Length: 135
Image (cartoon, rainbow, N blue to C red; front, side):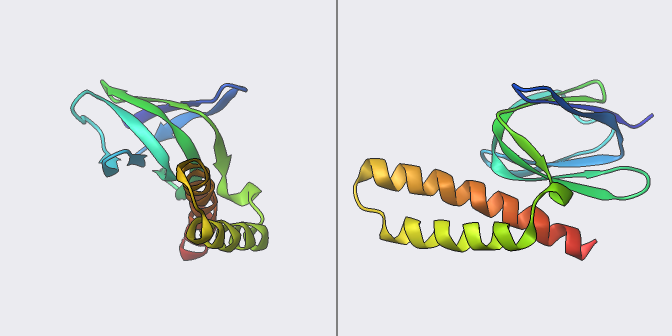
């Protein structure tokens, strides 16, 4: 038996299926989950999530949320999720570069917080597009 994974967003169930491994972008760094992982609840950061099925690796941009791992079931409640193949690579690269420039130019606490969130979001989308090329 492998992992049963459910990814839910506010709009709809995003993905359900079986996988051999999942790598999550948690608030304390990346966390890998394999079969028979210890039970855990963790906060998810904005970042790239990788899922390995029997056939291939798939990458997704996750925009924060929570993950519950228990008895070979992984339930992910994400604020937003995007599959890498649905992201335009050139647009993602341009958005990442623009967000990076805006973060460097940001002044004041509110502007820095907003620029940092936009940067993390753009970085996650750009990372998953680059990951697709590696596999």
